[in-house]
Image (cartoon, rainbow, N blue to C red; front, side, top):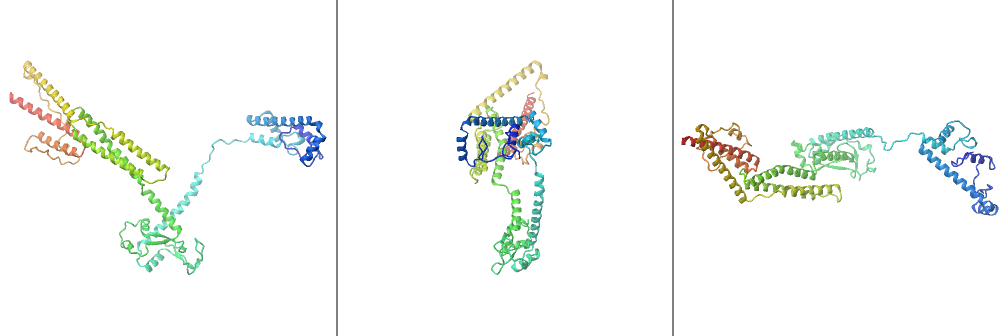
Length: 508
C-alpha cells in the first residue's frame, strides 16, 4: 500500500517504502519520530521521548522544519499550477498519469499522487460560464396547458349542466328532485360506503347526499351550496325573462347542493369573470381624474388668451367671459381635489405599494391644481380695460381723420380720378349665413331689440351672428365666440363702407 500524502516528495516515498515492519506498510498510532516505536498513548510517548531522545531534540526540530518547508513548497506549487493552467511539471505529471503503471501511480514507480492527478484532470476540464441559464418555459407550458384545458373542459361541462338545471326548474320540492336527477345522473348510493371527503361511514344519522352537477356522493358536512342568483349569473341566465326563471324567487330552497370540487371550479370561473369585467374603485376614480385634466386644458389656454386680449384693450371678449371661464376652472379644481381625497380614503395595507400609489396620485393632483389652476394670472380691472379701449378708440379716430384729410387733399389736387374707391371684400372672407347655420345645430335666435323689417341681407346676417354669439357665451364656447366676433366685424365694416359710399354719392 502506497502513501497518498500530496506533500511527500518522491524521495520520501522511496524511504517510506523500506521502513517499518512490512516494507512498504504505513505505520499508524502514537509513533516516536526518532525510533518509530508505537507507544500506544500520548503520555507514554511524551515520557519516552523525554528520557530516550532528549539529546536528539535539535535533530527533531530540523526534521519538523524540513517537513513544513516541503509542505509549503508543495502548496505554493499547486497554487501556481492552478493559475497558469499548464506548466512543465504538469505536462510531465499528465504524461505519467495517462501512461499505464503498476499500482495506483504512487510508491516506488515515481508517479504523481492521487490529489495531484485529480488537480491535473480538473485543469483540462471545460469551465462553465458565469450566469449560464437554461429555459424551462416549454416544459412548463407542456405541463400547464393540458391541466388548464382539463379544468376548462370540466368547468364548461358544469356550466352546461347548470344551464339545463335552471332552465325548467320546478317550484315543488319533489318535482325539483326528479328534475335534478333526470338532468344529471346520480351515482348509485349502494356502491359507496364512506364519504369520499371525510372518510366517515354512512348510517342513519349520516345520510348520503348527491352533487347536482356531477352526481357524486358526500355527507351533509362535506356538502357545499350555491346560491340561485349566483348560479344564474354563472349560467348567463340573469337577463333571461322566461317563465321558469321568473318563478325562481318562489323556490323554497334558494341554493343548489354541490360537492367541493364542482364549487371550486365554479368559483374560479366567477373570479376570472369578475377580474375581466369589474374594475377596482381606484382605477375608476383615477380615470375620472385623467379625464378632468384633459378637459380643462383647452379652458386654461383660452383663459390665457382672453386675459391677454383684455390687457391689450380688444373687445372680442369681455370681463364677464373671463370670470365665467375662471369659475368653470375652479369647479374642475374642486372636482380634482375631491376625487384625489376619495382615492386616499380607500382602505389598503399600511406600507404597501397600493398606499404609495394613492399618495402619489394625491400629490400629482395637488401639484396640478397649484401649478396650473391656482397660478393663473389675475384679470385686469374694469377701469383699466376701459382706459385702454378709450385710448385705442381715439387712436383709431385720429387715423380715420388723417386718412380723410389726405383723401380730400388728393381729390383737390388731382381730381375725382384720384378719389379713394371702395374695394369690395373678397368672397369667403367672412362666414355666410348658410355656413353659420351648421354650427352645432343652433337655432340662431335674433338679438334682442333688433327689427326684422330690414331688407338689407347684411344687416339680417349681422343679427343672426349676434344670436350665435349670445348662445356661444352661454355655453362658454369661446373659440366659437372669437370666430363669430371676427366675422361680425367684417360684416359691420362692409355695412359701414356701403353707407359711406352712399353718402358720398348723395353729396355729389
